[in-house]
Each structure stands twice: as structure tokens, then as C-alpha cells.
Image 1 (cartoon, rainbow, N blue to C red):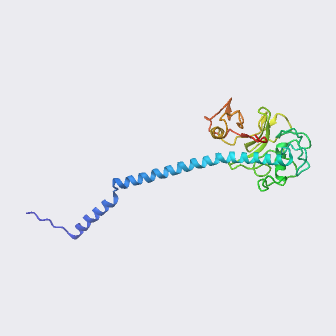
Image 2 (image 1 turned 180 degrees about the vertical axis):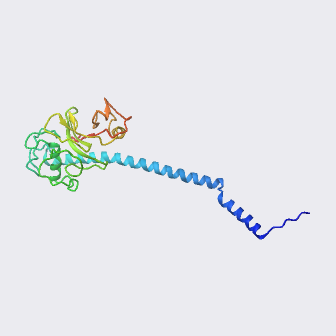
Length: 258
């Protein structure tokens, strides 16, 4: 018979090893739970990002519709379109030519920038929340807009805002979502947001523009109530979804009862 002699230190070392070994390993159940948790976290992050993107795109239409409602409200009150109204509202230099179009860079009368004058009319008539525009107007501005919330309203979409114009091809009064404008409007038929020498700057990607157009209109870039602007935004009738840059200003028809 063989006898082994174990010291107390040896026994303690053995049990300590077993405890460490138990603590350092995961069972299959534990690993499965960890993987499930990681999967849920990934799904939550990607799902949250998708919800944020959807909310941003919906906000564009919500804003555009609010401007259409404001235009209708002004029309019901004065029987004329803001900016185009032949009577000054708020400033002596806000009278338009009354031809039924809100011309971003023209309009005759004292005011040759009906698009900018429209915001003054809406604000002065109490239809537009006075906090939306921070600038105290002294004249209808023709300057370039490098920031928003001063002379034209800001959008919830980062670094973008809204301005009025008239599309001479579609014959629509529109509100235009645009990025910062490096060039000022001038009193010229070729100098406009949506026609001629375009002043509008890309605010969203062509893919986002298509998502908005497809959900809320006809999904065609150059027809319907929602339209893309600039050649980089679309080709013929199709949004250039292969381009991931912010190439698209977007116009939304705001004609009365449209």
C-alpha cells in the first residue's frame, strides 16, 4: 500500500486552483445570455438610428406643410399671397406686384424680393410665430443666407432653412429647403432658387429626398408637389441615389388649396 503525505499548504493550493478554474470559465448558458444581450444592444442602436432618421425626414414635411398652412391663412385674411400682396404689411418695402406668384428674386413694386417679403408679411400679420425669425427687419433682404433663423426660418435638419420662390416650369409657388446660400439673390429672371442660376444649396441626400417624395408624393423627382432641385440631386425623373452627398434642395408646393 502506498501512502501520500499532503501538507496543509498543498491542500489549500489545490482548492484555490479549483475555485479559480471555476471562476474563470463560462458555461454555454452564460455565453448564450451574453450573446443575446449583445444582439439586443446592437438591434437597439441600429433601430434607434433608423427611428431618428425617419423622424428627421418626417420633420421636413411637417415644416413644409406648416408653411403651406401659413400661406393659406394669409390668403384667407387678405385675399392675396404673402410677399406678392400689393399692400405693405409690416414694412413700406414689402408690397408685391399682385400677380399670384411669390417670386424669390422679383415681383415689381417697391419689393423686388417677394420670397423674402413673404416672411415679413407672415410675421407682421401674426400668422408666423415671432420667435421663428430673430431679425428685426428694416428692409426686404437680398443678401446671401449663411445662417438660418434670422431672415429666413431654420429647419430641424442641420444647417438648412426655408425660403419661398416660384417655379416657372411647373408653375408652382413653392417653399424651398436649402442649405446655406453663398450667393445673394439678384433682381434677375435667371437668378432664382429653382430656375436659372440656382441659389439653393443641397440640404439632404438624394436617397433621403426620394424617401420623402415616395412617401408623401409620387416618388418622381421632377413632378408632383414635392420636387428635387439641382442637377446633382436627380437625373431626368430619377433621384441620384448613388450619390451620398447632400446634393438636394427640395421644393414643396404651397399654392392655396393645392
